[in-house]
Amino acid sequence: MKSGLCFLIAAKRCDIAELQQLALTSALVNACGRLVHALQRERGLSNLYLGSQGQRWAEERHAQVQQSLVIQDEVLACFDRLDTEASVHGARLFSRIAYVLQGLDALPALRARVESLAWTPARATAAYIRLVSGLLAVVFEAADSASDPDISRRLVALFNFMQGKEFAGQERATGSALFAAGRADTAGQQQLLHLIDSQERCLQVFADFASEALTTAWRGAQRHEHLAGLERLRRILCTTAAGGPLDAALSQTWFDSCTARIDAMKTVEDLLAAELLALCEQRIEAATADLANFERLKDNVPATAPGQGSAALSFFDDSPDERPLVTPGLGTSGQGYGLQLERSILELVQDQARRLQTVSNELDTVRASLNERKLVERAKGLLMAHRHLSEEEAHKTMRQMAMNQNRRLIEVAEAVLAMADVLPEPRR
Image (cartoon, rainbow, N blue to C red; front, top):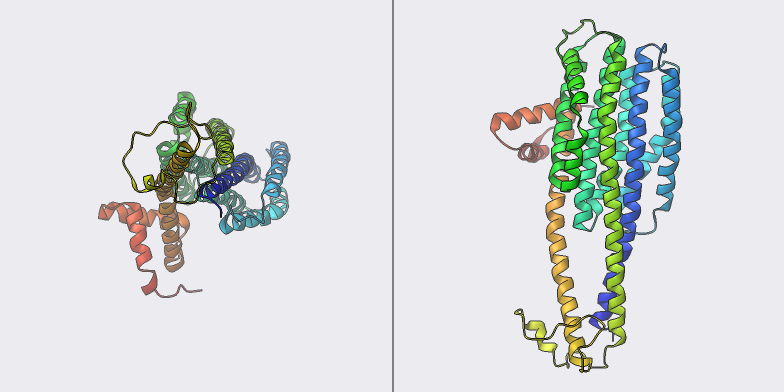
């Protein structure tokens, strides 16, 4: 008959397997982040190229495409290393990866449309956003499936930071198209304001979940000269009357200012990714050491019938007793292994139970942020379908409802979703 220690050892082996998969997932998240960064820059350069009607930025865009291709190969290699036969990652993560692979397959056709000037900056931007959003969804699912609360917390921080950086990249692309075209328009200005606000919301969530070292690094990365120049250009873009002229020569200044900020964000993102990988390695090392101790302890277990040992009734005792401290796998000096081993095993089992409860509670807290995001996204989708709104308009509507009713955004989202069953089917 298998003992409780046998199952404790099996549980620890499962922990190690999950942590090893988390380490692979974290490496994938890191690679996805680098590809997102490359595609963000490619998107901005493509908008400058399209906005200038192909007269400028062709060489810079081509060079960036080559860099993106190199990183894309690294992401594909990370996909290949995932165990598609295991259920550790979950169906949603694999579904997101399948979606991204379709997008990467379609990327050459997108680049060809940009090269031939067949698409407008708005259409090219929307296409890049779709692919980048798919990559960010992979990061989101990785955060949602993590079983270690500290790792999950860092994945939540990383996802929100990457999402904030994506909004900064969209801002760069939108402003690039406006400056390169030499004319302001209302839709572009409203989009910029929405993107600026969205960045701040994501960065606040990042600050809530990141380590103190990372939040300090982010504060230090925001150089005053970069922010001051960017704010000046933002005012020009957002306050020029619709249809009014914009200085096309400022397109380079705008791109450089946005890029300086995004590159600073990438530095912090890399630090967060490195911290995540280091934490995975620490967890694996600690779990492996625990497993070795458990197996040494198993080798010394006496052949005592289950429930007959002198420490058996300790199972029902919640209060600490006078028993000696015992290192797993080692007896106390001058005594046999029987009593000490039984108590050691009981302590290990009880400690494992307490740890699992703590992990569950911490994961619930961390995932509350992810669940709120899911509800808000579902509510936005409902408004988009039934009121024929864009994503930006749906989000703005919900924010306005929250302010008018003095409620949190998540509460508004829940109220919108509560009406889903009574709303008519959206018109096709």
